[in-house]
Length: 263
Image 1: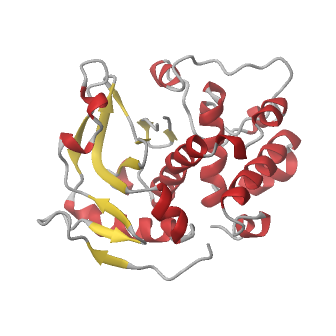
Image 2: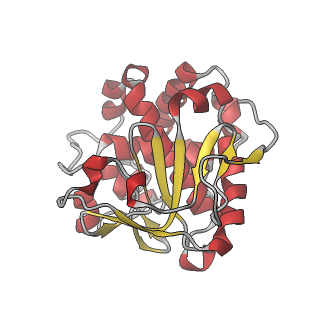
């Protein structure tokens, strides 16, 4: 999932490039212009029923607020770009829907993104509030990587992944990221002070899935300086190698050359 704490510090928790194809969705009519992009339902109308029933309990209490109409067209453009980076066969088999909201809360905390078995939930409150094109697209790749990791756990060598961390380190959040959000230890800014230990960001410390997510979002939509960091810090370089290998097992399209071309 990704929680938004301030515009510059965001948190996430739990192909061949093709032409952008956007067609109107027949699933929901109305003013929100729900859309199908590369076979994935992208929905903008908010109802609490978009959340899994288990998220509606008092303990989680998932709630949202409808996205601003003025942000819908920009959001469609961002998602057309993001989804075009995956072979359509992967999207058809792994992802059924993407839901966009202005705000989203769970556990009485704000989240920028989260995921369920086959859907991604994202927020966009406009670039002036920090929801830039980079942020929104990275959040999608972050959350989708959780679904892929959950569906294909054997494709990633997690023993080698943990061995790339500094000696003696153990991921420190039993709540798998939610605790980090509560303690305001969830920055997603690239942090070279942490890279020598094997972590791109503060949030990556909180759990292996969050660590994977953070690198995945930068493989598909790199933050400025990401590849310089990869080339400068051996532990990060090893994790990138392992994650490229993971994606390569999902589709042979995904290789080092493919990711080096991403922007």
